[in-house]
Length: 133
Image (cartoon, rainbow, N blue to C red; front, side):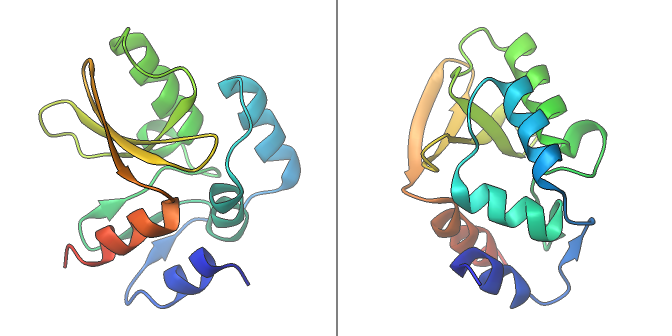
């Protein structure tokens, strides 16, 4: 079991969708234009999407604003400076701040044309989310 899966399983009162298939991941990657990082793939295969505390991550097997493809396409339309190699991991819906990850799994905050590195991995970002409590 990957580290991110065990971390999510340890979260009290985590809500999740149904895990997704390899085919769904391939379709999402085709629509996004790049391969999703291994940690994110493990996460969506197991959980689809998650919500806990004040955290709501994008994923697959969900619709609308928490669907990773829909959320990323929307940000690309709204923000011409949105990094082309990134996808929306979490949209805080505060002051235009979006947390994104790139195909390597590095995590950044994007606020309009400002991009700042947050974490070296999605698992590391999960630790920050867990500590929000």
